[in-house]
Image 1 (cartoon, rainbow, N blue to C red):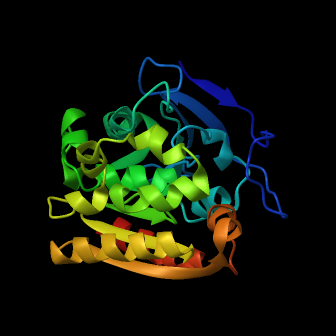
Image 2 (tube, helix red, strand yellow; image 1 turned 90 degrees about the vertical axis):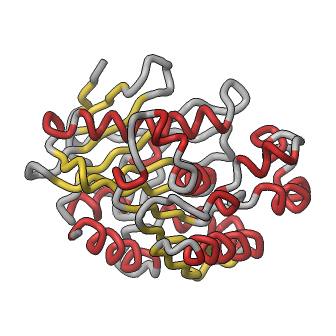
Length: 282
């Protein structure tokens, strides 16, 4: 089922900037049979365009693809000539993190299969995720079973951008986040140490991995520590990876890296621009 929303329509759940601009026509596409297996898609102005596929955050149990609508990053990526997709996935506790990873892989496979119809280049797709979404894109980019389950290989994406994630090493996160986030991590990752390790991108980063990573974090101790450790593990495996800190503290900074991305004066914007331009040129 596909539904087209008229140009300029907005959603009250969107993360908006102070200078909101109308969006191009949005199509809602189904990549699976479950109600949440849907993606919003904005075509580029010309065919065979690169695709930025965005995965929202929300502690693995909330959030929505509609957060892309009206955002600075959507407008900015469209101006770069990119097609953009914002993906929903099944949520905890109705689904597991493993099923969420399978959803991200399935959505990626859907866009590759339908590339000609949608006007995108199937060989130029970068996954971008924020918060829990950063964990999920990093997870599918380091553990090949998820792409393999969707009929893909690691080289079927051009790169991964992780925006202020954590949970890259789940056991390392559990005690600290029990204080900060209540039972969110336990709901997502359970109490079995073996499962927690199996869901940890850093512990899978020995390869094979997606071709390249950009890992950004704000000034949060856990995000900085986890981001640097993931980056080090990727580099040790021979994967092209870069980590950078962005100004902004705590949960406010955590929200801002998602809300302000694409604004010309925001420090993360040129880093993401450079990564996308390089990966899409290859």
